[in-house]
Image 1 (cartoon, chains in turn cyan, green):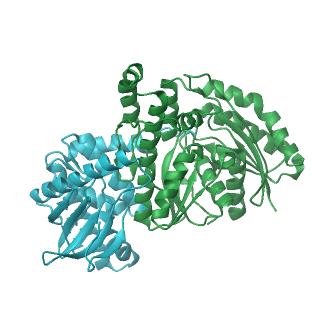
Image 2 (cartoon, each protein chain N blue to C red):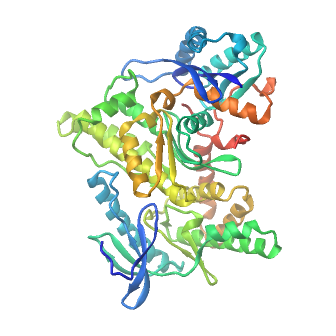
Image 3 (cartoon, one colour):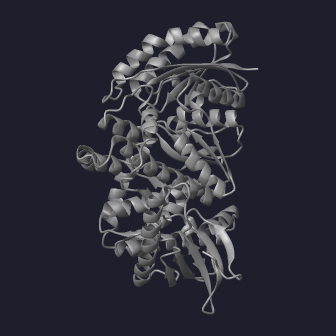
Length: 222
Length: 335
């Protein structure tokens, strides 16, 4: 899509190009799901459309569940563009990387707090049967004292413990590969999760062990 | 100057290769091929390996123009893989190590693929997509380990292709994947299949059950041909793999991709990956079937690197095999 001149390309994520600009006088972030030329055109069209829809729905549901997420200002289904409220914060990936490099007790406390907040966010959305689908530390933003959840393109709604467990598994995998040697982080996240998802976290965590066993100890041949 | 011989037999390929300082002197291979509609089973595969391994070692030595005393190091695949075939090769490795009085090193099969790819393509620090009959992993290096960023949460992509080939009765010679690739070139019509990406992880088992259920009636009614199904399957599963690789690249900030493993020979997958990487301004590295498909040279290469960095062979009582030996368990001492 052709954007006005004051729109600047911020970065090219895996799925979309991210632009910064203003929309009706407000600062916005635009997510453009550009065509992936490596994909078959029909497949690409289906996937982009599905994800655009999933993202808009996921954000609405997330906000309704009381978890901070950027507001959707406008969606253009033809160009697959989504105009979102700009959240001026840092990703938890960056925050963890810089905080973990220091050894001051204050910083390590801050890490614990942030990890706990991740768990709480995930617990809350799971309690409302929202599956994020792509939980990584890059998809949490910290702004003020709030932890925002972003990137709902792979989100879905499900009441099954299995789907929630896979969601957690994806987060765990991302965590150990991005922040090696931080077993503490995961303990905190689980603590936050159980705290905010009182009704069903136990069942999900049991299922989570099953999913873990499937992935990690799966027979590897070849 | 270390001359290393590598013995590989974790699945249906038996390979013996000799490597001298990153230069491949010989890389011989025998493949156990089963009839159409059948996969390879541990017992028969091990029998195949036992039958061929001694002639293959002789052949590798002849091609490299070497005698046993010229070899400095014996490397063998410790895992992951099928138990019986792994054992049949490990026994031979231990025997020649004692006969020739040489140090022995057990190698992780996945690390072998990665190190061979790095040696052949000379790429420095790539995001690795490792795709084969038993493994589907997106790997990046950090803090002395090859970390697994994404992987299949059920079956491997190669396994999905192999089992699909059995469903539609494609030949296993030279490999089911190759025959699917050739048939897909003639396919035109895209059958919508489940597209299952979960973060950086993927899932393939749903696709297979979907084809099992829906594919046969569609073939019978003539609505789709076998070629169309091959085409649809490739387009879908490869798009999933390229997408997760792209996610890992965006997450780690990497610009290089290395494709390894048997499925990485697929030209269509290489094309799709190249297209994605080009749009990101990066470079894709791939090797050909000599090094993509399981081989002995890759085991020799990874073993030689390990031995050169630590100076220690694998202790004798640890020269066993492990069917479930994870990529991220190995401490990388050579980088």
